[in-house]
Length: 499
View 1: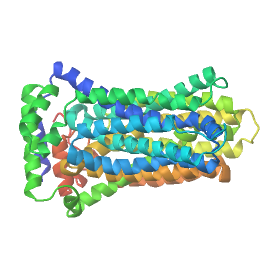
View 2: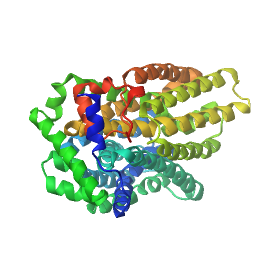
View 3: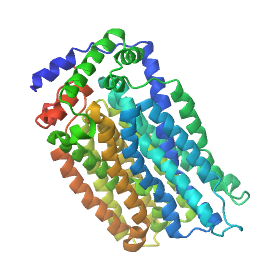
View 4: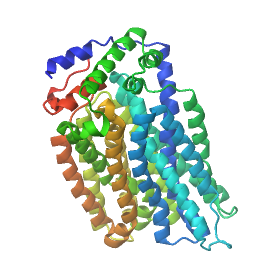
């Protein structure tokens, strides 16, 4: 396909106009982002609940590791299966199913029985607790693939980055909410009420209900409807989130590409395996998802208090300081959303990985040169970890989820993002299992030097392999990804949105 072809196919779309459809798109993205909020809360809540839970249920360190990481490994499966279910069954129905899983997973965790006496281990209670965490994990993984795809397919390409990126902002807001709720519950009820960790987890049930009731009123993705040849429904939905002329032009584009794909006779996994360019883009997607996790961001989000205690803080100081990670993550997320449609995705990745790698090196050096026991050591390490979380959120996390939601062709979008995120969650799971042993075994310095080395490799990968997606319609990207033309159009040569 010639470069010129894409400029024409894209400029044929009438410009965006404001109108009542803007409010509708805003409402849809707000409701769908409850999926992200639940994802964040369910992954963050363990950060303050693990102590009281271990004490009441008599869990040892290995069992705590199983409880925390079972969610993460289940999320890998949820991402893979959720993507495929959403390709077959629809994005909206899949999100409704996830809301049900979030609710019942929460119930299992909250009502998992302890032993006969406080602090005694109950094998049945432990099994119910882990089952609940696995159910939550399936929901979290499914939400991590289905919600960004749903948003990307509903958003106009000019503002797709900031609409899809709202989900990542909802995730970090959920994590912050979990840290704050945990701190409030611990400081008001700690010591007076038994089982406060159950209350911490029970809060998750509310957004799950909101997601379910909200999604009942939301439309299906118009691009998914076209893929299923339900053209009239697709146009009807698109007209609620676009001006009328824009909806018509866009639906024609989507139909044309979907027909071309069908004409080649393959969709989904068969199409993927029969096209070397699709195999390549899935491998690049896996690389991007793994690079995001290998910065160690989730080790901080799950075990932040542990890192701060290791650096010399008391347990009380660490729980309070941990809230700072949640706050800067949200600030970084807001900053990222503002720039999502202004700065190229590749540039954003490069800035982000450069900053996180520098932070890793500085944390390692601080651990090396500031002797244990000095008053400055925990403060400097905390400031550097906060800088790391801020760089991660401002440049990497939002951009990674947006890029993954837009790079894959329609007929395999759920599958493509599902495979990529499966590897991301898998990497996250291995780190979640090993991180506490790593920090206590080889110390902060060596742990963060390892992260820095991986960061350098990730930078080389992004600069040489990742194609640009900003300012292009999903349909023009789809043609370029399927033919390999996307690799010929490098960052300095990308198609401007308003050409």
